[in-house]
Image (cartoon, one colour):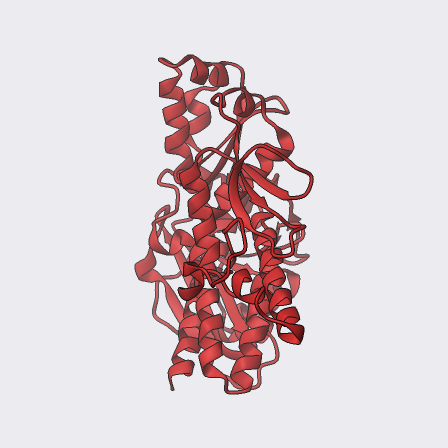
Length: 424
């Protein structure tokens, strides 16, 4: 049975929560505030039999923090489809679940909302709990990757093609001939494949390709087309990183930071408390307008007033490794409060370089890095020990969230500078 104590230390962030009985998943849900939603489950269980069954038949909760509600929607649907949790399936209305259907084998695949049918000729994504939810997903994606939602080809271009949401329009392609038709048809199918990738949760490759296009267009002075691609990148950032407009950190983070302090004190005996954390990252697309960011967590809360951004001044730097060193050196010259802990996005080489900067400046500040594949913490002491945490570790999640926030802040500044370049 789930208790209040199990919920008290969960995050107040966007993401997913999984009710489990040992290793069996009973129910998967999502919320813009995980902790608040779980508390409502607990309260509703006093009155609602369905809610009570979830609470009584589960003994632990796992959470997956996401950067945006969009990501949470996509991951929730994917997990429910793959894992088929008991209570997600039996509590459906008499109506069949809702899905996004892509008629992938059609000459011009369409994206439509449907009830469960699985005709073996189309791709299905879901299930989703409401038409409104699916419409939001489709509309959000369509602003970045245009596609058609009409079921049949007609003789004239559709209304949505006039406002850029269906481009190239299949109705228009169907009237073309020869190489023009083939090129437009290829572009349309490429758009559909990108939508499939997004619905599968695979967006990194799409963003990477957009950035490549952007660099080529800028290099060739094709600024009008570059602005279109830049706007798509902005929209991806809005879609996937909505924390820009919200205070996303947990309000009762104190216990988690105490746990972090206990763990790190083994390596940094001088670390008695963690009141101020600074996290650094570099954003650099195509070697132009490289920037660095400093994100600050103070007294258990994100403090955006303390954020700082750095436009890289040195020319000819060949790597983000060197840019990070510039940012840290410039920061140390400032008369800002001394942090109790510094976190950088990187592994042993980055840690080693920053420690040399500390040594040269006769500074002693606890330093850790977060390396990837898998996510692990590198401790900034001799030997550079690796700390491997469980994937749902609250300590690891704090470090991840700070890393992601510093990345978001750096990227936002980078794109701002590039947008200014377009207007010069």
